[in-house]
Length: 213
Ligand SMILES: Cc1cc2nc3c(=O)[nH]c(=O)nc-3n(C[C@H](O)[C@H](O)[C@H](O)COP(=O)(O)O)c2cc1C
Image (tube, rainbow, N blue to C red):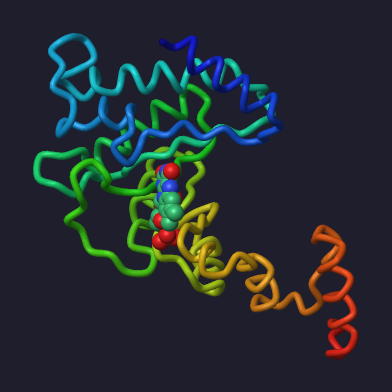
């Protein structure tokens, strides 16, 4: 089974990806091992927290060993199930510390996804998970969840509540969000050199016409 994770990692590297994220969230296989809501095994992969973490940690170890040392490995978790009897933030701290010891660089904190989510949702609602795990384990953190405003994202990073911010639905709403954020945060002239030439050409001209410096 672990060989398939190694093979998938090699395919991703061959395809040119420079980050590999091991997905332990949202009810996917590794989350099913972690969460007591889904894991009903009675062997060494079920029961205690240590047992439930065993397979995901073995995957993390194998993926890390398959990757070059200079490429970062992210681990995405549902930091809480937010359901009675589910995976907890305390569990996430333990898991992140063990993942870090195996070479994970970044913990990417989402929530829920197994059987729903009974927690509150507001801009940045998942950030406290990232922040606590960062503080208690020293791993780098990524925050996601209703972060839509550039100044909010910047404030979260500046306050060391997270190291990275990820966008989901806001990127659907505004695919140019990173460029718009750069302008909102003070970079007046945008660099269009990486844009499709037919767009970059027009927009570079527009910057001049608008008198931007
Ligand atoms: C169209 C769509 C597809 C998504 N697919 C995945 C996925 O495959 N794996 C995953 O972990 N999260 C997935 N997500 C969740 C996002 O990664 C993100 O955690 C979530 O949307 C909350 O962030 P947001 O408020 O910025 O959208 C998806 C979200 C959207 C909108």
